Image (cartoon, rainbow, N blue to C red):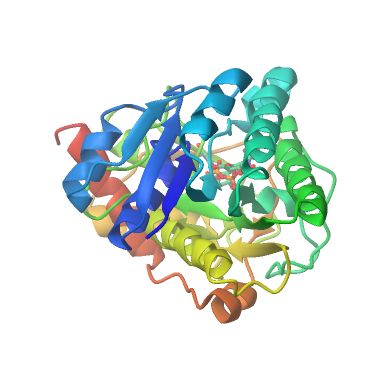
Length: 340
Ligand code: UD1
């Protein structure tokens, strides 16, 4: 099996994808700068798969180092590019850092990739590109709306850069996967999400509150036009999401793609409200969660859930885990790292 480069391979989604790639027999090389991840994740990957991937600590902003890395690894057959910053609020405070971290690095990687004989590329995009879509569920044809934040903008610009590159680089083929809301952890509880500081995302905030690290979860808004007044999202188990990367890569490697640049929504197709996620957590954990209603958070859309028809039919992929499965795995992981 070919050699696959995973940038950001020690991060949350990256590490789960490395596990699935190794399970399928791929040889994996990871680049990560450890800015938002831990070297210990390598041990988790090894414990699950019985194989330690090649790891190089490398900051993709360092162009000469990126160039020399690729000189050593001309036999790479595909790249799954996770490495990026992803905190919406931070991106509003520090837009240039986001453009440098997410755009400069993408350009450097593509400059090297397009010089390789096999230039297969999978990009971590986000449903954030749709903004508040007018029609639910969201198909890939829904219009891309003006970005709400520099972070969101880096995903839109990133997709455009890749698309433009695919038009001219003869060997280049790419797929952008537009993730909905990834949650959960590997069922072994050997890898999972490791948010730095106070979590911004719902599920890690829930599990940290239940573990005693936070006092109370604030539910951001209960006056949205939804059945229970709280926002609706499509929460997808990170292992299902990881598997979507593997099948997308295989589509390119096997020349099964229909165009040199394609996009796929990756979600479950099921929308769940914030209160439904809390109820799911209480059901699977048996823990009563301390939460309160709070004002809306700026920039939140009312609802976003995926139409997964295209991924189901063309990638032959479907999310298997239910919300309860995903939330339970997140809780198992939280208990594991807190020694509960
Ligand atoms: C967020 C980002 C999105 C990004 C994704 C990456 C925003 C506005 N959007 O998605 O662009 O791609 O993370 O992981 O930041 N909630 C609470 N209390 C909390 C935390 C969240 O009620 O303490 C609610 C939110 O209002 C939202 C839902 O839970 O309705 C999910 O929030 P979150 O997990 O942050 O995901 P998104 O906002 O959908």
